[in-house]
Length: 173
Image 1 (cartoon, rainbow, N blue to C red):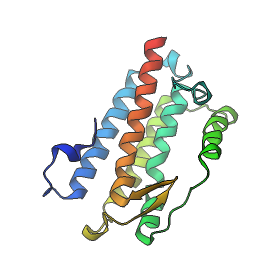
Image 2 (image 1 turned 135 degrees about the vertical axis):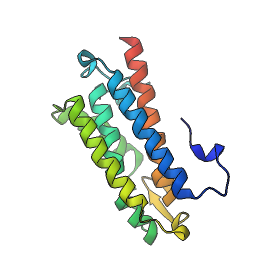
Image 3 (image 1 turned 90 degrees about the horizontal axis):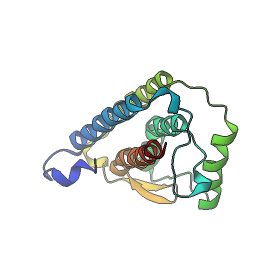
């Protein structure tokens, strides 16, 4: 999908660009979710590094659904210039490996769809609060400086990364 900002004029308000990206990502999330046969829901997602390949396809989609609900916290931090989540990368990586293995995952595709849609609504309501002069405010989150614009756009990038892994897993089944 790549960020729509590349194809947009610089006169298009950032809010419209970001909203379109979020809506497009939501549509693609639903399309991917609908394309997964039920018998593959618990099959392992693909990741080139075997240490990170511990999530099932369903868990990977649930994982993607979490980010939008944290956007308000990221935006508030960016507004104040106060980041968080800046753990050493190896600790963050370990959490990514361990959590899916210890969390009991029983969500159905419909439950994951509902969680995504709830998170999406939170992201959209946060988008509606952004003032014109705030888009370039930012802070360091997860060891990366992110402006408010980047906080929103990261969701699309994150989805695309996991969607590619899920499609690869489905191709390998």
